[in-house]
Picture 1 (cartoon, rainbow, N blue to C red):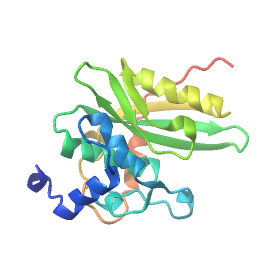
Picture 2: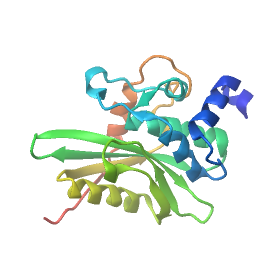
Picture 3: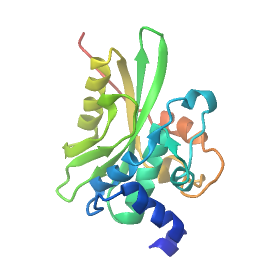
Picture 4: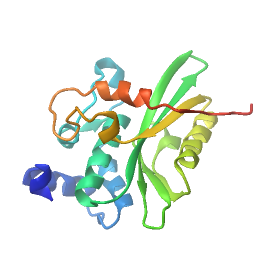
Length: 195
């Protein structure tokens, strides 16, 4: 599989290094690799979405970098695992500012869905594979937003193959900021929130 996807032996060693002593036996174990990365808090200063390869070479990554990285690692390490990206949008009423969050969804053999996530907000982390559908996972993040005082707005689910078939999200060394626009175009559902 390594040769088919053009990952190098050094990149595979980096994956193991990032996982630490944690075993990589099931799709959800990819979270250990994501946990091996620092979060890039100052992402607004120089917004740059990275490929799988670039994220493997970076000390710090954003939520969307982590989503792309985990999406690619699921392909590499657990070929055949169903996976999607879930993009969620929210508003901060105090600052009148909107922002998004992106996670990778993965399906266990029993059909239950989990999520792999990177965030500086405690409530926006990984989700165990206990959800029946994508909307249930999105609702769990919406509840976390509400607890933080944010207003969840809308979400969408897509694959990188659908959203960015012309972009090299695996190996490109430059920025992939266009992916953000493509994911926002996949927003298809609004949240109904009772206050």
